[in-house]
Image 1 (cartoon, rainbow, N blue to C red):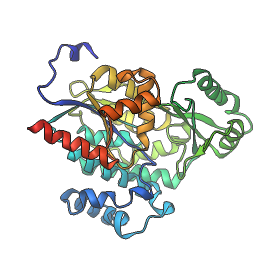
Image 2 (cartoon, rainbow, N blue to C red; image 1 turned 60 degrees about the vertical axis):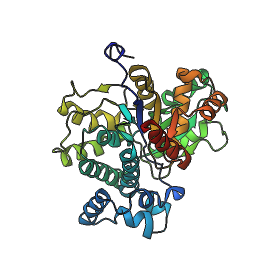
Image 3 (cartoon, rainbow, N blue to C red; image 1 turned 120 degrees about the vertical axis):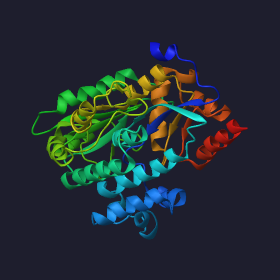
Length: 362
């Protein structure tokens, strides 16, 4: 906890929440229909749909309800990213700020854009514009791809030797015979590699098979690597007028840097969001570490859709020993007693959070 926060009184009956926004890969066949169920008929979804219609795109309402789920369609960046954002936005709006205090917001990869909206650094419509534009640009380019591989054991305990060996593959493969290989995301107990096709092939040969890993991520470019320099240049030109402002609550970016309401330079925030964030590794683990240590949340909440980010977040928390968690079994026991990590994409955990809100009101 920072010195400033250590000197602040905790807020009455309000529980302190760290919000962790999801990124790509969280809206799949199982999540189809979620948006209409949570937000169908809402004014803001009608507004999002109108923006999509004006841009010549299928509306989110149509994609989530009338159009049967197809990975080849729904997984495309220009559709997947806005669907994920809208589902997360519906969950964020359900959190009662009179009962819960959001002390900080972060996210994984594309989740950084959602975090901008969640923290008030962008309005909801502006965030849709950013997310839709970046999703479309990434899809058109599809420069390289991503492969994910775990470095923790089956009980989510860190294997630091394996981690060093995996990172060593980058030095061994990158730059040889046309291969470009980079660390893309430090994701809890997993490493996400970004590479061109030559590098991905070499990496897949070098990684020992382990259950479903190495796993190539469908329709994912080499996000957060130098392969996105072209996307960065085009995005900075197209989104030069993006009206970023100081956030209303602190945000933690992909370096572990905190952007506060009282010290943020909007131009610097724009420069990071459409600059370093696109071409340098995204350290999600560092963001969780800073969120826990600096803001001392009572609970961590991951908006939907889905719950795939829950495992990576739990793995990062186990590395910190948060709540006394030392491995997967300890995490599961603690969650059974009282959930401290809540994925709103899981119906029972979303309902628990809302019921908790109601009980606090009594």
